[in-house]
Image 1 (cartoon, rainbow, N blue to C red):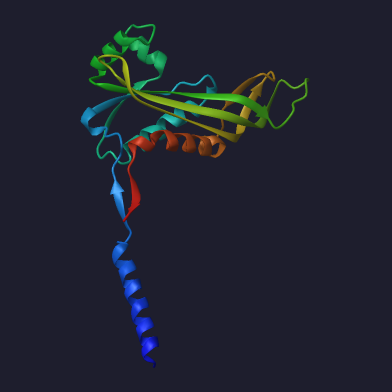
Image 2 (image 1 turned 90 degrees about the vertical axis):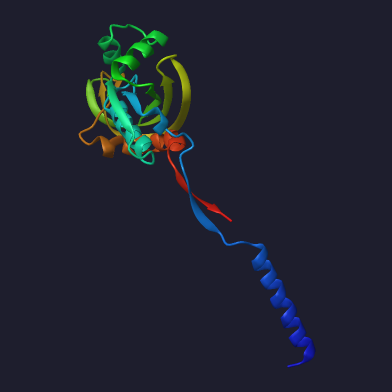
Length: 214
């Protein structure tokens, strides 16, 4: 082997080694939730509301509870009930700072989660005859989930997040050709994908993740 070739190989090897030394190995590290819920000790959960009838909002509430707990260790949550039921339980008619204060003291919580699931721009994929009063159809819809965390002593919002998505839903009951009820024998099959996506986006601040670092 010639001296020049040996010299070239040596130079290239040194450059490669130098490059490896200047680029530390990539590693994956666990990063905890951006919003730590543990200091709040016990959190109240108001069932999400929705202008649409059916089980859609209830399913979203349960999925959000699961997502919020996932990376928060032993998080304690108390079911406060639907909005109107929670109001009636403390003899209040509207959600104002005093209502939050009374509900917080009644249930022993310093914070509450509240949310609204809105379905809009409903586009049925089946045109029903004017002679039909009811039927089962699918529809493409736009949906928005808004969730906020309320401090009960002040009624102030201390965290909020929203997410939107468009999906085709099945198992939609149509009555009189105008009112839509999002209901199904199997809610997960009918609109589970929509709920899972919205909750996944909204709950990101409350969950940890694996991230790549050098």
